[in-house]
Length: 110
Length: 175
Image (cartoon, rainbow over all chains, first blue to last red; front, side, top):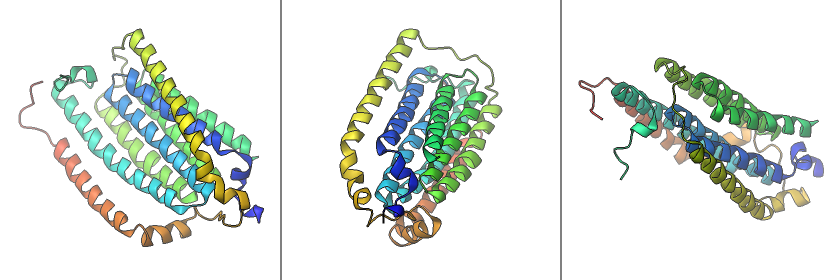
């Protein structure tokens, strides 16, 4: 019955998916930390979301449990809504202060 | 054959993710992000999660990236005028995210035996059709029917919010 197991699950250990997702997630964190352009920061957040969904899908396949892939589907739904609202906010900020440098938005900073 | 595809796609994803963060021009960042999304969709196909691969390409590469590209071009940001943070802050960012990466790897490696142990070892309870549209559709419309319907309300409110925010104000807010 071992031929039931997906080919990739037999040849690639799950640790490699963990390494890939952790690296992608930390690249996203790095982008949030070192860039000042609001749109680049937003894209880095998308990278982090994708790293999380990739690991969720890998675990779901290795465990052959459909719930993990349904969660990924809902994460995509939330991400789509989040991008629409977030980009509208960025456009509004640009319209008001003619820049999207986040260091200019420091009114809420102690 | 599949392992080579995995390592190629992993390398492609990491390389283009780094280029998203480090490229000066926001338009190049968006295009490299599209490349990352395609690499991740390839990983989904390798994992036999075909429904997710198709939805990922439609939602991310089709909808979200077009939105990003429109905003970058609408705001006319394709100039390299972003002032950079000091190199001390950049070094601190690299160290912080590197430590976070080590922590994540350590945490998840400790959890793998509980997560994947049962299904793979005997192969009897393993079902490789779990990521296909037929199976996921059954699960989505039986166990997860209420969240699925609630997500339509989320989309409606996001649409109303985006239109509200995008509307031009009478007088600009002073900042």
